[in-house]
Image (cartoon, rainbow, N blue to C red; front, side):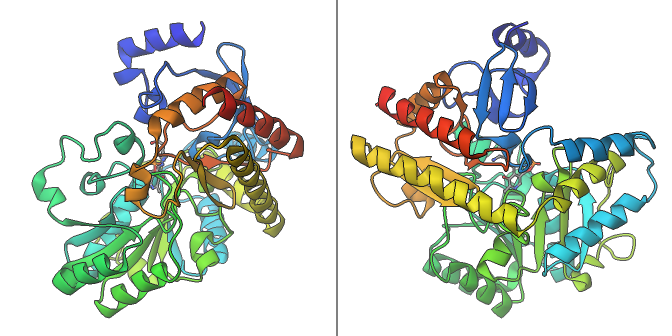
Length: 424
Ligand code: KE4
């Protein structure tokens, strides 16, 4: 069956025909393709088309798809069984791997998604501080946690539903909203509610409304103001963790959060989330402490094997190469857009970059909103025609992998340059 046939069939039994809304292409229009297989930087669709992939399954595929070392690790684990429901040796190994790579993490708990990781981290922060309010930033997305689906980014924003139905007002009432990169706004919020705030949860580089980078000193300001008010600072590094540096953004920026949420890369393509931080806080978790958190498949041996293999393949050379690749493609597109007189701003950090059809710098969610999303949709489809798959939303971020080698990058740049021209 081809993608269209599969999609029609899928819509009979799966809501919207997809298992995650952003895959439905609603914001860019058209119908989604189905992937038959993936290898390296290439997705092969059910229509037999090869696409250079800049979504990388939304981040996990930092080593490219179907990496042989990850496959071998999963195969070896598979020989021993798929799930035990008891502690297993791989859980200890991956916990030690995380603790040795992220300075702020002394203890870590595995779960099954980024959503579980952020949900558990905010429950832990509330349990540890005895406070109820949480601060999140407009346009940031932390998974589909009830209390965080408030002016959220990613698929919620893509579908124009930043505040989901089904979230009781009483849940959202404990969530305070603030504009990212606005020093005064967060200072004012804490002057009003400081002693009620359990934590700030922040994507240190917001990447669910395109990619925004912090103004000089902003993350340090969040660190300082939370310390001053006895609140915790939670870095949601589900996207950036183990991708933008071994220790994520907190290593790049030299900021030590109290708790961090992880996902994506840490699972090597299998369902894994994790959250970690100072032992003094993490020990509030059951069974030692009063904050309950659990999961049947948490620490699943196959997922641990994939995640461990993915972490072991990361070294400084990988991050240097990814940084260079990200800079190369961003610079090439910026200069081409300039040559063609197209208003295009690209924010890039390491192997993540976002394209905004906007003549001005994009440093806040308000700036993002001024970008031409219709133009992005035309560009998306023009890129698809040229054999390049970008995230199907102007409110997402592109990802590179180590499989995007020189030749693949050059081909992709050529295709994207052509797509800029044909979608003008
Ligand atoms: P998951 O529950 O989807 O594993 O992770 C939620 C999450 C938490 N925090 C951040 C910073 C995230 O980016 C995400 C999920 N990212 C989206 C892509 N923007 C996943 C794609 C999707 O929803 O299908």
